[in-house]
Length: 67
Ligand SMILES: [Zn+2]
Image 1 (cartoon, rainbow, N blue to C red):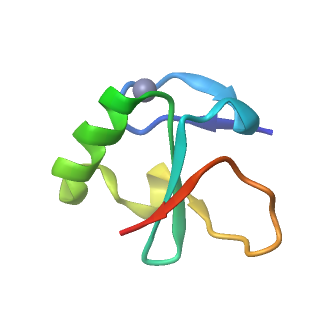
Image 2 (cartoon, rainbow, N blue to C red):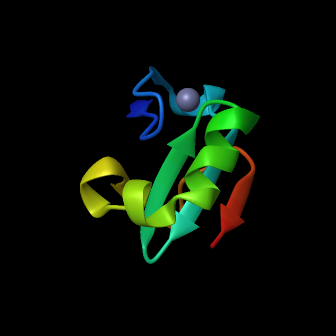
């Protein structure tokens, strides 16, 4: 399974994500600390359902944060 980083647009396998941020029922996969910072500071721009994936409780994911 691949994800698309909403900040830089890079496509990577789920297991390669630097962090997964769950926000309002959606998972957002970020590739690196820089994209994470950018995402967290511009939630309105990036935390849109069409840029993430519906959060699934049973999936094993990399380090996850909740915002
Ligand atoms: Zn990125």
